[in-house]
Length: 298
Image (cartoon, rainbow, N blue to C red; front, top):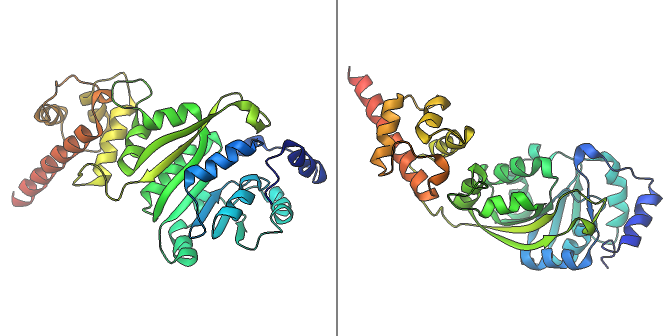
């Protein structure tokens, strides 16, 4: 029976083990059964699912996952939490706890070993400081993933859903939308955590696209173009691309590529849609191929 969503039970466990919150790990434990149930429902977890949980803490959400899923692997970086997890998860025989840094875990190998390479579901209450590296690491490594349901800072969740023209729109918005369909499930106030964070949170579900919604001749180049466009937000797109220095094209050539896209040469990156970024990266790719071909024939 999942019982750690009750604040009294959480306090009892923390006192039993004299646990001190580690600021460097951004630890805020969820103490709301209603929100925990919404996360499980949003992730659409069944007994057929293998779930990877990132940052289980004292096992609050892990208990709910164990009751809903076929198998769970929980990856926890804080060594001090391992004996607590051994205690709080002792009733469940379908969970394995790994005391590792998720950024160093070979998730594709884990999915192959635990789930026969079939798509897994990821559920996490992510520390704010490491949200983007974890999400992008999961997507860019092409791990077989069905969905990622995560608790993040509300501002970050909003950013993942944003479209062109807004100040929140940026590289993260485009990267997430290239790989997945983002949907904010519920907003979560600071009072639902122990200790209380200074900002609001949100649960967002990222449902993996079967194939990207746009065509890029080079995925690597597409993300270079996106990063270059937002590295210096106040500069024009042409200046951003030119200053990035990774495209082997002169600024004038990059301006020509932008104009070939059918937009003004002085446009800023935040005005382009994902589709336009993909088209621009394909134009730059063709220019690079032409240059390389002409250099070989000289």
